[in-house]
Image (cartoon, rainbow, N blue to C red):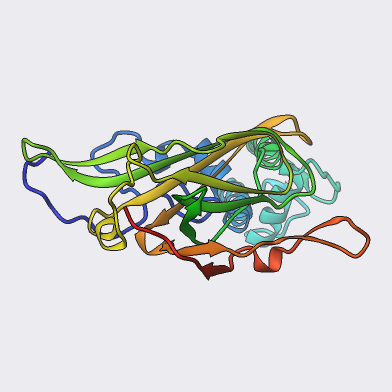
Length: 301
């Protein structure tokens, strides 16, 4: 690391996109993004993934079609020199359709058919496995409040944000982890990006089915003690949130993440109450006001 402090771009460490990871560019690593094709195919969005499968299918059949053309008149009932006929013969062969109208008439064509049949079976198996892996991969649908607030809780300024399970099931043994990430200069002049764990009033719950207001008291032991909106922005501070738990539907561990930068932490604000009671006496949660806040009095440390 350089001993000279260099101003970093004001970017978020944790992307808000659920399908994205951390917002970091990696240089000089031998393990590039394209060197792990299995992980790439699992993490691609659905449209690019299906488009890649379709393009690969067309290109593979086009390649075999050209190979059939190179063998001359080797396909019975195919028009001589017709790329369309050899292409659709390739499609029939790869998919094991076998209409019977066109069939190989030479040893060269028979060898190509055998190779293509093996390639088709291999490709179908891989595509099926990838599809299953993508569908079976556990995902969380956790809603985080758009902002975090600092408001009094039992007389102590407290950092708060909301989380909610968007699915109509339960996340068992849910655990919440919150860290403060900020820039620091050591006594030796080194620039560092440091992580500090924030102690929560309640960091786990046995059943997470509705909403959860996560709280961290800003007392003398808190890494946030003494910070203001301006100092958080100057230190490029970011509150990184991670949630893990067991999805009761699929009995697999799921993960969710979020982050709040300095401008998304509102001091002297409190969340609007969304837990109401209906006319029939049942509890009602008003998600339309999930992100709403209102001003409160707060004393700064």
